[in-house]
Image: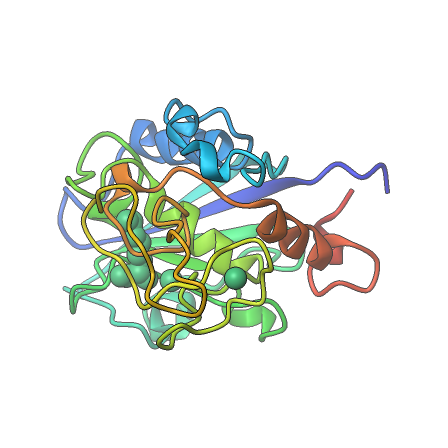
Length: 243
Ligand code: ARG
Ligand code: ZN
Ligand code: CA
């Protein structure tokens, strides 16, 4: 009602090994990283090239750790079919998913760092799953995915953002101020990296919605910000989160 978007975050930790039962400090480090990345206080925000300085955004959404729920399990890996989100299947049902962002931290397997549910899906499976080794910035967080940006990227999907390459060759992400990208970028591309799509723009490889290493991504665009804020506005799919 007052326009502030402050998202309570429930962290559901599913562990078999002691290492998977990540520390409170590692959990808080992820909340801190989300707050920096979504409020343009990340220390690498000033690395955004001049060519994109007119569109780099302070999204202005904050995250507050609401509660941590821990459960010992016998599963070695959980895959990507939402079983971690179901108490009956050995996981944990989400807590108040229409007003709180649920994160599940577990071993996913298959080389997957994390995955998210877009707005408009079932509330019983709403939220974001992150592998414990790519969660936060301390503890078991593992290079080159140890700056908390898997969650930044996945929460971007949870807030309706598409991959910057539009999941197709020179595809559309429905954001006007992000350039066309040929495909996903990996590692940390040297700047400028030119697209061969229409207009041969310089690709915005440092955008959180590309696939680069954590140290290679450090901005959202204004157009992405508007797309995210729209889902919290009146009539938006996540309006129940707005205060
Ligand atoms: N869903 C993507 C994957 O599992 C996440 C990529 C996140 N990228 C990152 N630098 N943390 O591959
Ligand atoms: Zn993605
Ligand atoms: Ca675009």
